[in-house]
Length: 101
Ligand SMILES: [Zn+2]
Ligand SMILES: [Zn+2]
Ligand SMILES: [Zn+2]
Image (tube, rainbow, N blue to C red; front, side, top):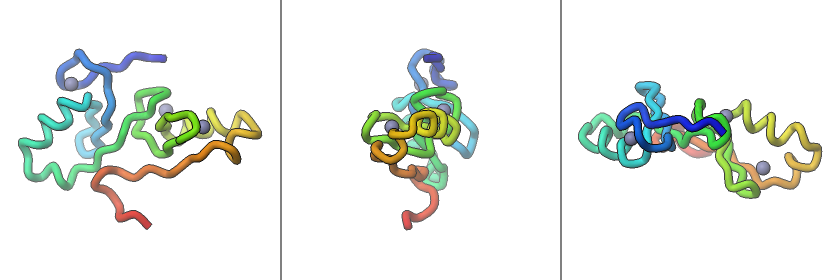
């Protein structure tokens, strides 16, 4: 697995993908950077894909305990004919994105 470091502190593993500024941040920097800014409520944050750590996660698989981007989700679950029906997957939304259906 590729190790991707936080854009901001360059020392911790990336966990959050901020779409507004295309930043990949660790948890502490995400809080630090955006808590200082009232506009941060409008930022859409996603967890970063646990597999490639390069895309915002779109799906959470409770079975694997992973969050995955669309590409990695199809790689992981469509390659195995059992996975997509047995694994408990939920579509993820940004922390402040579209209202949940
Ligand atoms: Zn950081
Ligand atoms: Zn991915
Ligand atoms: Zn799965």
